[in-house]
Length: 247
Image (tube, rainbow, N blue to C red; front, side, top):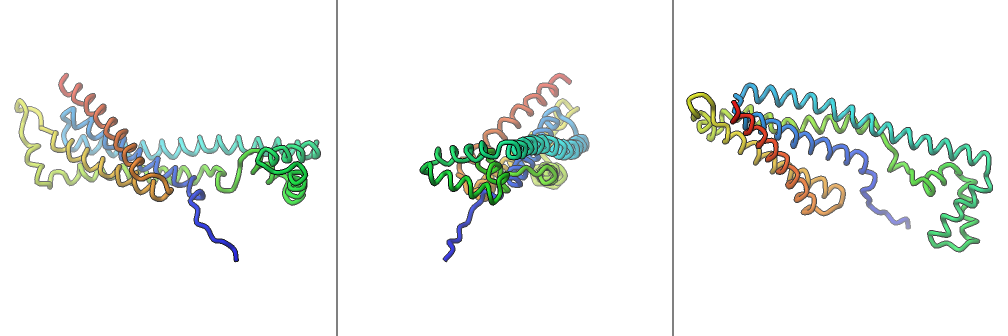
């Protein structure tokens, strides 16, 4: 009977792009909202800034992922073209090259020779792509997939802090923000605290879910995203408070 196994490696491409996009959407937009709020901007300006950050961030993620992954594809294709040329010009050397690889992996020289010859006869380029270059169907770069997934997940992540800004006036804590400082500025600390708490909680959920999906350590992933998310928000809030104090 054929043994059936469940693996997660086929998720690497889209999972990486999805986690990067969602994490960046939450962290960058919440940090942006917190930074502007710390400078004592009103809710309208905070929301406009957040929406602009969402649109710009999503487009930047899509363009950045597409360009960077396309560069990876170009490199892969260049290596494959070189292998095609070497296979056409020096087939014997390429067989020995595979043989040496299999010997290093533990095969006896005679068996390594047979394996190399049979795999070369079946699919020479595929054998060299897999065993010499490390290129497989699972690891093949997909620029369009990475761009779309990153843009969509960034937008979804960025929507969270924006929704918090939109619903904040209707929350029980909202009346606290109406306390005037020096009769000129609104106290935005309740908004900062609310956005920061919800964003960090969402980052923890995202880190745990992505780790569970990929079969990695959930606690380690949660600790990682919490640390960097907190650091980003604290630094951005500090900058906002600094500029707010200068006004």
